[in-house]
Image (cartoon, rainbow, N blue to C red; front, side, top):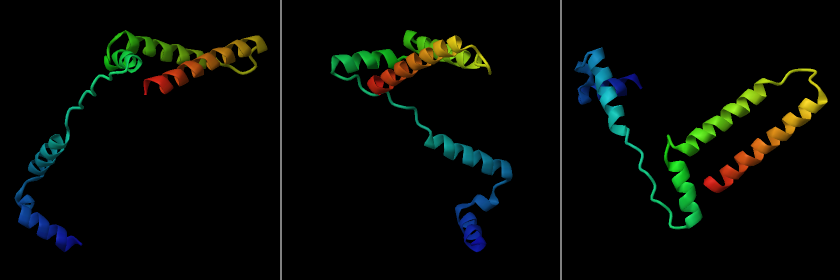
Length: 111
């Protein structure tokens, strides 16, 4: 196996490069593989177009709203503690259910 690799390096010219030149060549190869992502076309269906408009802007109102919802969810999870009152646990479970329904709704309709 080593003979095949040495033969390949000799024929491709890699064997004559320094370590930094090899790193540079590898970086150039990786940069050629990277392409900017294309934006999908806007759907013709009105509901799908509304969902598209909401989600396509990465710094829009919807993205900020979702960030806030996730932060509130994480803070709520951080407030759990052992031997908490039953009433507090019940309220927290209902809030968790609402988060679950909300995220399921978004996952179903916005995908």
